[in-house]
Length: 282
Image 1 (tube, rainbow, N blue to C red):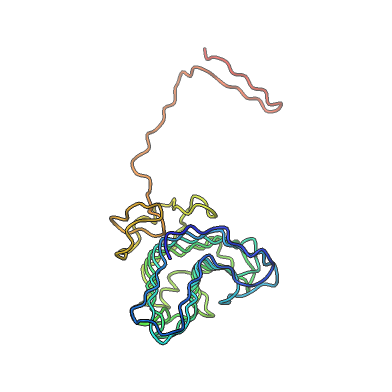
Image 2 (cartoon, rainbow, N blue to C red):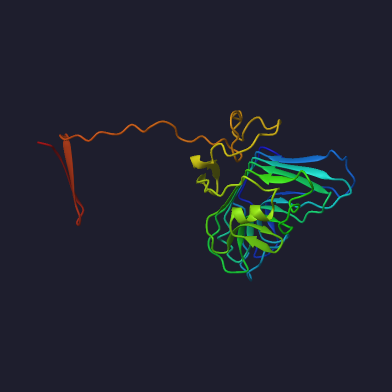
């Protein structure tokens, strides 16, 4: 699943049923051992719910989820490749619901290998009261050396951003909340490294997920061979970026303006009653 702009998805009822921007799941049949499911170059934003009921803790089937990797056990190992997606979630309109930019369901050893890199998971939900909470990333298994999947799995070089830390957490593993990316990486070493926590400063959190923060420029790792363009159809060359859109920071030095010591006109504004005079300089 690739090259989609997904926004404005909403459950317009006060029900706890989950709402997803993207939900991916595998078959429980026995596929080829080489089966790969790919999700890349997607922009997901403004996924909301009208839920206003009792405060809910995180659960795999409730709340607001940007990208939901709802994997199921199978007899043969699948590989999920999740690259260069950008997700912006704001669940402030449902303060008693729990939300996450990315969710990876409970893993079963041998059934799902995950390669998750170069993504931006941002959650702009405001302050909440426990047990309601908001996350950048949720994994269904408590942190360990194999919590993110069988050998070969990794979650590297992503940006996990939480705007409000009041019941806001970088990540969750089963029933454990991690306040910072550093704590979460330590619990999941060596499968999670080089992840950042930087405000992407989107042009618009709800509708335009181009990054406006040069601090994220070039923080990615090598693109897979099939990922040759970004969501704007611009070639991906040079140092890898995070997210669906290439990050192009401002360059050069701004040219200073000039202040004239002898202006040609003056404007005089008196407050109140808001009288304005415009007259030539002498």
